[in-house]
Amino acid sequence: MAHQLSRPAWRCGCGEPWPCAVRRAQLLEDYSDRPLQLHLLMGGYVADALADLDRPGAPDAETLRRQLHEWLPPRTPGGSR
Image 1 (cartoon, rainbow, N blue to C red):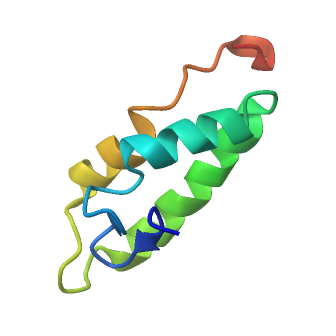
Image 2: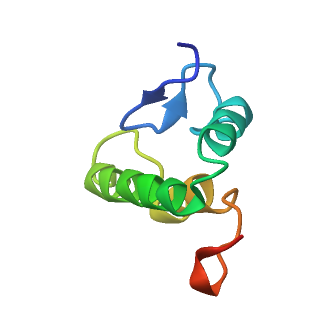
């Protein structure tokens, strides 16, 4: 699959930062009826990213935060979109 994560650089197989626009669209579609699970999934990636911060080629923490969180749909109290 062209849109797989490559660590520790946190790049997509297409060359863009992961998740790239294509992968984000896939994730949003796959989790369209389960937004909380999408947030939890991405939280797991944050934990993985934190483990990579000191590895050569890894982005800095702020870059990873933007890559992994800024594109997520907002969560509202009570779990609805």
